[in-house]
Image (cartoon, rainbow, N blue to C red; front, side, top):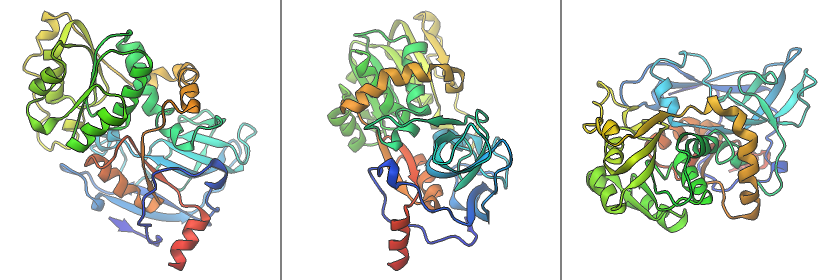
Length: 370
């Protein structure tokens, strides 16, 4: 990975965000962007990225300059590296920042803004364009929530459960990659919706234990311990009504085997094949059971449901404010570590949503003095 005139990355990760009033780092005369420099074959490495330094852009009429506070790194970024991301151009991604200079009446200095021009310290945004919208923070809700449980991650989970699966109280649910961002949100929201038995799969025994002991799952298993089909049958011996798929492959096959007649599948992602350098895996061997059992499988694209955001916040915010649920996040500190955070997420090093947080002025000064 190439790094041009960047500061030394901080070493200690954060596990809890600071308050909104203390999070904005000082405006810098230069900005950093992360650019993809080559297409990976298999698992990406730091050498596929470069940090590029440039002057902080000045806003033109109709735009505002945002200094970013939080960045989201997501599994779909890996899929986009194969051809959707343009090489040697700043990468996109969900981001939360604060307006520091504006030439548009719709954005005022100090406004908190969600946008998709991520993987950069500063961005020029236009109100309403490219997913840009201001937020009014809810009392008692940390900023990390707006890129996790209250952001696209949580909205994906909510839409999958309420629109695609139409989950009803008492119905049994299976969630793959249940310790990740969408998976933990699905578990939290499904419990609030009155789901019956909730089963999750994860990539380690520690993660499976975390799901069962802290996140309200009735059962969870490490998918390395056997076939998903057998492990799920043991965890849900009476079958399941619905499945949120973040993995594909053998997880989808196992879920089809356990689904009862007229069961439903909400297909969110297929992380099992994102780093597959060869041909994509063959379809599940029991795919015809979709017909035999009258199952329904539907893909979930959260961008088709932006109109549900208000309903979603009305449903979830009271539970966040009461403390009944909390954002499930792993926070890495320092923009200079965003590539490390992304690769760590692909390796499964996170619990919940993987976020990157900007340094505060005090933290940057302490690191320099140290």
